[in-house]
Amino acid sequence: MALALTELTVSHFRSHKLARMALDGRPVALYGPNGAGKTNILEAVSLFSPGRGMRRASAAEMTRRPEALGWKLSGLLDVQGRRSEIETWSEGGAARQVRIDGKTASQIDLGKLARVVWLMPAMDRLWIEGAEGRRRFLDRVTLSFDPSHAEAALTYEKAMRERNRLLKEQVRDAHWYAALEAQMAETGHRIHTARLSALAQLRAAQEQAETAFPSAELELVQSEGDMPESAQDLLEALAESRFRDLSAGRTLVGPHRSDLYGVFAAKGVAASECSTGEQKALLVSLILSNARALAAQVGAPPILLLDEVAAHLDADRRAALYDEICALGAQAWMTGTGPELFAELGDRAQSFVVNDAGDGSTVTPA
Image 1 (cartoon, rainbow, N blue to C red):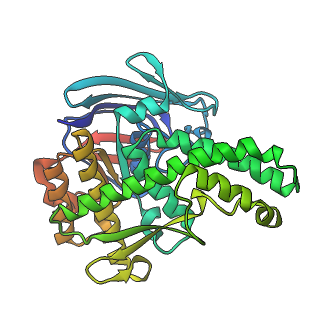
Image 2: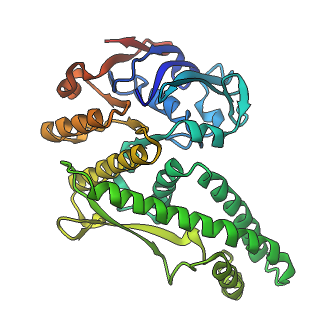
């Protein structure tokens, strides 16, 4: 067992008043009717990694209603033979807190311990919607390789918001911009470098694997021009762009203008022009590549969260996906409406039934 949750307790979280699960490291199949609370369990597991979870919800949005008492998640995490007790919670809608083995910890500490990667139906439109969603996807992949990426992104965003405020107020004194632009240049270069490193690791993982899922050629592009190559270049570009930015009322150069461009490698067709099924297969391929690359980097695959993935794959692709998950040794949490969607897994997985009992969701072993 390389990386797995072996116990999970969910309290007053979304539709779950109290749920306890005992796990043995195998993949986890959660099935039950739509709206029963399956995805809520996956979201709870996603909070064992840094950030706002797979739905990007606020702490207040995650609390069970109507009580709104706050919520708490706890679990035992086995990391290559070492067991850690993880607790994360929010009271009264406040920012979530973390404890590891009884000691207060940061989300970056959590990211160093647990790597969690997910795929959910909302991501199916990744290739045909705006660049923001693709940047978020790439940053999540990057964060899985480099837990400090989140801190750099937050620092950059905070400095950029302040710079944009000055631009909107038509402040022209260069002294007001100097410190902000220096901070943006340093963290922006770190963000860009980390993204390029993550893409390189994804490419290598795709090239080294024989898989039933198609590979994607990936490239980081800018909405216009090129991304400055160094922190100093970015600092100079920000200063040079200031007059243009004043007219636009926002910052027009930097890593926040990057986009992820993908091509279906075997066909040479842009991912945005592929069929819905091909786009889904490309996404599954990237998630599996992310898992393989992490296994090579840290010695263990991440925990995988695959929401409703089986419903969008034919039986052959489902079987291929399950075989790859088991070959990786990953604890994959998967949801579906019925047990037939997980038939190809057999006893390689633990199964749980999720139901709506009227006063909340229940989770019971199948």
